[in-house]
Image (cartoon, rainbow, N blue to C red; front, side, top):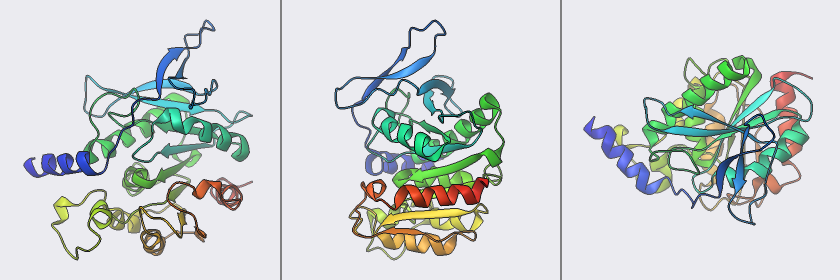
Length: 277
């Protein structure tokens, strides 16, 4: 217990950088009491079709997580569950979700970690791994989805909970996994010169989870990533037993991979493999 608290303390200081919340949760005012993310800044675009639900944080009676679902243009069960990076919240991610829902013709669901946006609590490695299970279970329960309807997508620090879920019995039936600018583990990013450290001190050991991910896995990484070197993605691609051909975006840094003209076509091709035509 003491070691777990120490790791959470380290992760809270080094891995998570919640921005000042960019949104509040408000009612649409259309009579059905539906909630949405209301931007607090003109720099954040309103996405009215993104409907908000609250999911209790795992093991907590006082904290709730904000979960947003952006529907596809046409009704479908096909859904991406996206776990975002460490310095953004849902208000900043929603425009991308709306774009992906439109061009990929699937629902896109995102969630804010504890301490991000309007989600309660304090972010930590142990809680984020438990919370992604809670969000995944709520998605199946509330939307009537099966694991095969869902592709798990983890971006940057979001690759941690995504690998954790995908490697677990609960996530084993997912249709696919996307690892976007992922890392081998937190310590391998924070201290790249170290050759060894106590296993208990590592954060998000994706390298250990990857061999247990049975679903088709697409790794997407920029070759000029200055935050998480592309070598992390290359190694993970070799560790995932069902990895498909990865997308190495030449010259892309950590935060602009999705700007590549190769990004959407590669995602479309991968989703076709996961879900069929």
